[in-house]
Each structure stands twice: as structure tokens, then as C-alpha cells.
Image (cartoon, rainbow, N blue to C red; front, top):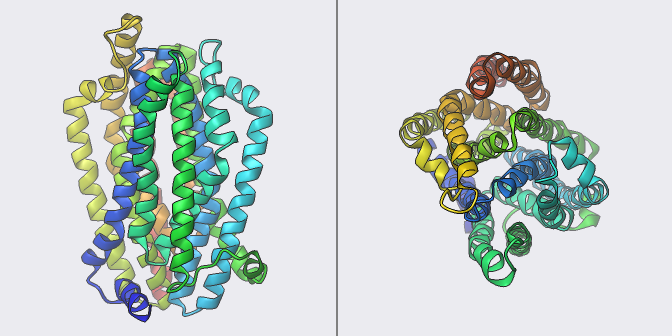
Length: 464
């Protein structure tokens, strides 16, 4: 146990930064990709039906899934980054209390979200743009994945964040990845074998619910074992002893992180509503694009999440030189990924989007039109990749340093001041291409602001 604890400390304090970042980020990137793949597998198999309305419905539910993720960030990002800072400051007993508080709070938030969705799912989906053609499918997916599955889903993400910030990046990623692999196996089984035609969305939702539950159980088991060598706990009695200052610090980072994701979700809601106002096929095409472009985004977020514990630990311990080197290394890696994404999507936009909708079945004319919209959206929106990474990276770095207020200001400027107004303006001026162009335009403006805020945070950390 002592050896394992020493090895975790070595990663945070002494291992060369590129190697330390590799150790922490690679499992996280793999986990992000596998979880992305299993989300995309739902869309892929639904696309095999050739039913554009099913695809449009899953696009609408993505908004509610993202909100579930946003809520998990309160305890996952907030609790995880605080855990790493407390470890860096040598306050392991308080770190243990914070981990227990994060788990208990996560379960309570998940229960509340599932209850609210159970009561208001239909009017909410109609508000988000569901039509008579899509509402039934959207309700099926929401009731299974979020009403029944919100608690295990949120707990899984919180447990993974806490494990990662305690130095167990590989084990956290294995739990999330295992759930993703299980979902890939269960999807075709439920959709095309066990359930009759017309119930493909129900099958996909059941597969996701069972996979998230299995991942939660595995991560809880791993978390309990990790308590032997890390300051982790699940005890409500331990959670009740958490210092008020720690609770404030957790929410000071967690709530802005949730707002950040929530505002991102709000921007997607606006994009979906604008797309749905054009037609259900434009909405389905945008939904396909959002799934495809999440591949480079998942890698970028994996790099940021892998760097976050190292940044937080060294910020708290006062090793600002190592903190800055980690920030710069992660930024370089992410920009390289973004450049590759632009090249690939410019060359292969149509084949990439065609994977998600079968154009050879009934309704082929609608499917082909949907693909044409998706390819157009992808070629324009992928240009945002480098500046989008700068925004992700700056936000995660500020969260690692406990600067929740800065994160919230950045998120508000990025989504409310810049992106959403540009979305409506450019759509009005240029229709669907304008809607697509709003993303790279807004991310570029926001990235300049983000880098300025991060530079201020680094300078403040260096001077303290």
C-alpha cells in the first residue's frame, strides 16, 4: 500500500511532465473515446433503420443527457479538483471527507434530476423542438436512460473523477470504458434480436441503462478498494464532517463547471431549435454532425482531464514551474489533435456522416438529404477545432486552480454573449451555412478571452 501511494505521488511531483501527462491522459482519452463510441453506436444502429425521425429524436435527447453530465460535474469536477488540491497541500483527512461528501451529493442530485424528468419530460421535449414525428421516440429514450438511469450515470462520472484525481486514472477509465464496451454488445442484441421492429430506440435505451449501471457498480467496487491507499470514502458519517470551507470550495468550482456544461447544452438547444425550424431533416443532419465532431472533442477533453490533477496538485503544493509546463504541454498536444481533425473532416465529411444513416432503405430520399446537410455542417463546424480546444483547455486549467468564478465568466461570455447571438444572426443572414459558421466564429472570439483569463490566473499563482 505504501509503495502504491508513493508511486501516485511520484506522478504528481517528479515524473517528467510529458510522461506524467501521458500516464494520466492516455487512459482518460481512451475512456472518453470508448464512451463516445458507445453513444455513437446508439446512433449508428438507429441509423441502420433509415428512419430520420428516430435520429432526430436522439438528437433532442442529447440535450437532456448533456444536462445530466453537467449536474455530475458539480461533484465530479468540483470534488475531484478539490481532492487533488487537498492532497497537494498534505490535508489527506479532509480530502477523505470531501470524497465522501461528493458521493452522497451526487446520489442526491441524480435522484432529483430523475424525479423532475419523470414529471416534466414531455413538455420539456416539446419545448426543445420535438414534433409529432419525434416525440414518441424521444420519450422512450428519456424515460429509460435518464428517468431510471440518472443516479447510476451520475455516480459513475463522479466516482471516475474522484479516482482520477487521486491518481487512479487507469482504473477510472477502465470502469467507464467497460460500460461502453458492454453497451456496444447489448445495442444490437436489444435493438434487432430481442425487441420487435419499431422498438429500436427502446432497445438502445435499455442497453445504455444496463451498461451505465454495470459501470457504476464496477467503479464503486474499485473505489472502495482504492480507499486502502488513497484518501477516499463513501461513508455518509464521514461526509457530514466535511469542513464548511471545503463545501464552499467544492461548489465554487463544481457549480461553474456545471453551468459551463449547461450553457454549452443551452447553445445546443438553440441550435436544435433553429435547425428544427428549418425541417426535421436539418435537425437530424445537425445531430449526426454533433456526434461525429465529438471524436476530436473527446480526445481534447481527455487530455484536459488527464492534466487537471497534475495542475491542481502542483498549484496547491506551490510548484508553479511544473504546473505551467503541464499546461503548455497539454495545450500543444490538443492543438495537434485539432489540426488533424480539420484535415480529416475536410476530406471525409460525407463518408463520416453516412455511417450514421442508411440511405438504401425506405425513405432513402430523406436520408440522402439528411446526409447532405450533415456533411455541410461538419465541413464548416470542424474549423472551430483549434480554438474550441483553447476554450476547453483554459477552462479546465482554471478549474484545477480553484478559479470557479473565472470559469463561469468565461462560459457566460462564450455561450451567452458570443455564440448564441451569432447563431441566430448568421442563420437569419445565411440560413443553414450561417448556423454552421456560428461555431468557429464564436469559438475564435471566446478563445482570445479565455487565454487572457488563464494568463491572469497563472500570473496570480506565480506571485502568491
